[in-house]
Length: 249
Image (tube, rainbow, N blue to C red; front, side, top):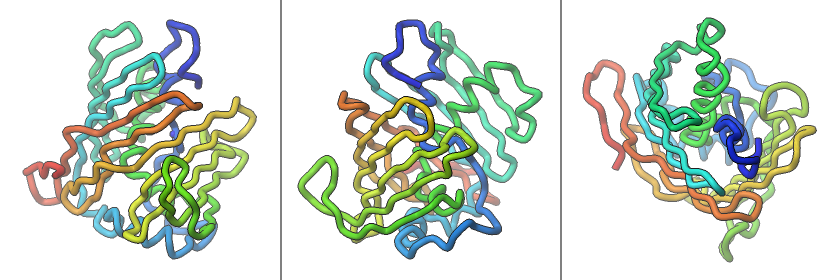
């Protein structure tokens, strides 16, 4: 899901990459490296994975207050065609709009390939993290009940680890703290591979329903010990066969 403390003038893509828990976006796989533990599948079902095929389009705005920077990005994504529409700003603060199909990414501009699409991957991963845990086939370990990293309560810890080779998420590990209701309460992300270590600890709160999907809209915590906050606003979905948007509430 780069270093936000880099010198002034660094491209926003550096901030994006720091938060790219997984830059792999795939639809549900036909085969998996392992059978997920029951907790992973129960969690994904709680968030609506069984109804994801009904989703024709999703709209959302991703907002971030990070050390030294604020970001806002608006998206519309059609999963069946993997078409993405984006509204945001470039690193100079100028308005930017783009619409593209991810299957044709190689023919897009450098801005789309190097900045907009990685940003889409990052923000979309925050939106539907529980689905990726099942779809992507990482190594999963249920470590039982553990204390939350940000509070005194406890939850069941599901450790998610990507392989050390391939992709932006190589060697990355994050701990998902899942409550009895099978909802994520907090996460702790550890960047892996041969890159400088990074640690993100954040809550998973502000739950709302958007059609059949359960969305966490509020994430507060720390980035390498410094305060950060991420949020989703204006979340809505359109179901197959309908022209109406259903607002999250």
